[in-house]
Length: 227
Ligand SMILES: *[C@@H]1O[C@H](CO)[C@@H](O)[C@H](O)[C@H]1NC(C)=O
Ligand SMILES: *[C@@H]1O[C@H](CO)[C@@H](O)[C@H](O)[C@H]1NC(C)=O
Image 1 (tube, rainbow, N blue to C red):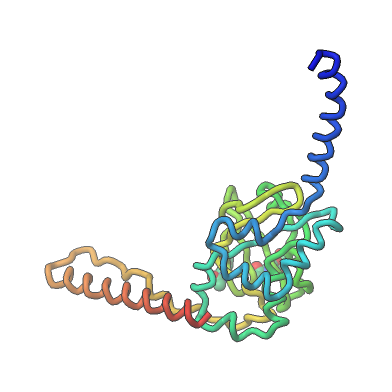
Image 2: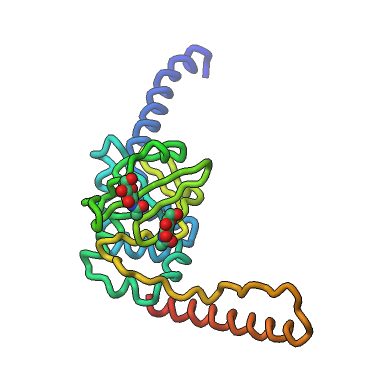
């Protein structure tokens, strides 16, 4: 190839590159693909699919100028719920629960403090007792309060300029559906250690610890099956 030929093909190359860039950026992120990678959002993925919210969301990326934010509870958060919690919901309630985890705005980590409470979610009505969601941030900590649970916003699972996904340590339970919800008794909580432990006391503690561990395991197994 002569120098002249190389230069004349340069514009063509640029056009091709530009086309590649525009098609890539116009392509909406696929929420399920993104969530499948970390491997710890299987329950959330199942719900996003079965409720049709994933498809809805993927379809709306094209139309939205403001983007979306998804709060993603990992499987651990679902298994921490009282057993049967999700199964006992109606189809509509499952849709609302998932929509409650989605904001119709793209929120960066530093933008959380600019939100005013209650923050509207895809579930709609933010009035008292319906689907209000409060976000409070102090320093680096961002907390979410639903009126039923308080959750902490954790690591960023994904972020581009139209979709942000943040891990949350709890399933966000909206008042409208979960008023009066009682979390299961925390069996894993360790008892306060006595200042002095004699021999028999230590043995007691060990037995107690094993029992707590055993209970913890059975609850986890029960929760996994009851979900
Ligand atoms: C949420 O914030 C609103 C407005 O500040 C307040 O009236 C409400 O009590 C808060 N709810 C919860 C559950 O924190
Ligand atoms: C959530 O946090 C608020 C304020 O710190 C507290 O009053 C409330 O009892 C907490 N709710 C739960 C369910 O832990």
